[in-house]
Image (cartoon, rainbow, N blue to C red; front, side, top):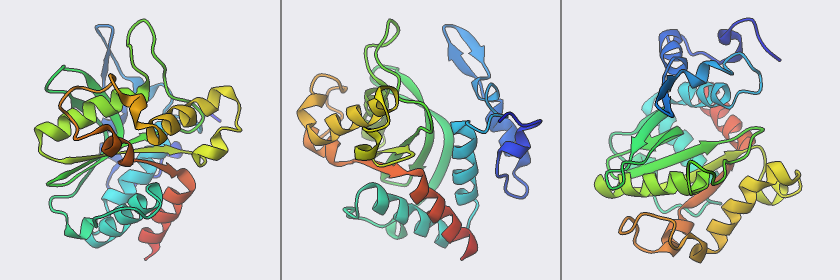
Length: 237
């Protein structure tokens, strides 16, 4: 469905109208041209950006205690409870939506749907709804997951932080494999990198990680259903 205005398509927290306007009017450099890429689908009910903003902007406008609860739940769900830290012990917690990150080593840049930053942690969230990851083409030799890992690991190294990557989609990866070739691609590539760390060899920027096994270990998968429940819990608490 296409709404008459973008406000109908977003959950806008009180006083955040200007922030949403700024978010939607952000520009991206594509082939030397500045493009307001988020405006293209801002009124579509299928917009990944609209859903991402609606969830994470609500979260980042909660109290510090609620933000800690939400981020801990997100990490727990994404990594099947295998997380060795709590955001309760983290300092300078920030939640960003659509932030652009640049590799200090190769100058590669990438826009991240949502990211969490603390004094010593960096978490990238790649959000998908009905689309799949982009694959290598004439303009890039890497798929979308690898591009995020390359930049994220390098930024984390320069900032002396531990890096985590979360893929956010409509169903768990094993279920996604049944959704047909186009939609299952994301799950296929994620499972390959998660379960066979050797498949990452030669794809990441050198000296940005301890070992490939650790990179795979710090890759998690989150469903929109889990995220929705977390958002609702902290808001009504």
